[in-house]
Image (cartoon, rainbow, N blue to C red; front, side, top):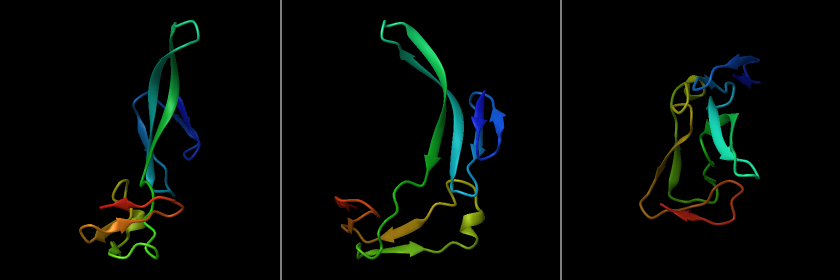
Length: 102
């Protein structure tokens, strides 16, 4: 079982839970690996999914943030920011050093 600090309870393997008040979802997973001697090893891990990097709208011309009513109250991934970017826009992410082209 995995302990979810945002919920202050435990979840079974393959169960998922909300990361509210943040926009994300976590899941309890079994991870298989090998130790230094090459022996199979299994352990529990929390897999976290979130919205990914935010677009820097001040540095990125050609993108706008779409507004969705009560978006912060929606479940993941619907609570994530949604953008409308023109074709070929050079996207710059918040705290990123290299732009991406969309």
